[in-house]
Length: 471
Image (cartoon, rainbow, N blue to C red; front, side):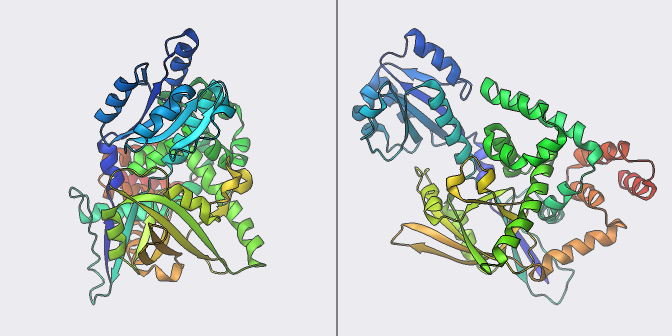
């Protein structure tokens, strides 16, 4: 059996081009004392926030922005009806917020990119935070596994869109993300305190927003047991934790993923527990469930999916879906970015079968219960059933099906090859071995050294295996 792995690179390209959120505020009275103070507060979201008094200067500035700038546009109520029609069709304008003293006066406005009308700073900042958090989840990175029959089982082949990677690196990377859920679940508990401190230190480096940092303080004060109980709530309700975890998975830098291992481990464990409850509740009433995810993809990635119908797709990171089709369509029809097409994923999950992925209904734990969210854990594997354009809805519909374990022959072959070479079935050894094969030698050595230093004295066989990998 030959296996061909292809990875989409759209998100990596965006990262390299520094795609970021930029806040622009247009208000004739921006320079009064109250607004100056509010500008300072908003700079916590964007240190380069730009304010304008002059309408023409503001519009000209917007015209000059490139497609990698995602603008959150704030405008006073008095200028909204005049200015919004002039700027809302620019691709760089992602969302619009009206900031005024009388909400009722502007409630009749129905501009397509108008997200909210706010009358106080807290509501304005909350609207920005919610938008940035939810929009960040629309990015996705995937790998495709094309299984081809071959007389030579040794001819397992990995092909990638990343030209500097070699066969072994891509094979190892695919397997690492496939096993990531198990890696995190099996991390030693004696590492929890250290891992929590490392993650909190990184979060404090990432943000200067006092409101967000106060939540990090609350997270730090909670016991390890409380963190574990509230993991999904922290993930969905704290924008910094949410953005950080999604970003490290999108960029595929394993050392950064490992830096957030504490939160990722807790999420994986709670999702595993919720998954069992989910299946127990649904088995009595139905045998399958259709889930939805709306987002935007570059056309080249849509064509890549088309070319691999009936093949396997692996989604890296935690994947948010919904039971509500209309919610997913709403996400797909957010302001369209240049070069992107609207996509609706329809995902069929057979509840009576054993899955190689973990997913659960987190409606009661989510910040947005109305979205009826079903969250998939890391390393989710699906089979692509079809990719078609729907003329009526004006979007692409991608049909996926949760993949059974007995369909993953190519992955099992790759996996067994590693296990035969390792002389150990321990997940922590496989974790480090794959790091070496991905070419991340510096982090692989650090990982084995750190783990070795925290082994209990009774783990003689594991200690010997670690030392052997360190050479």
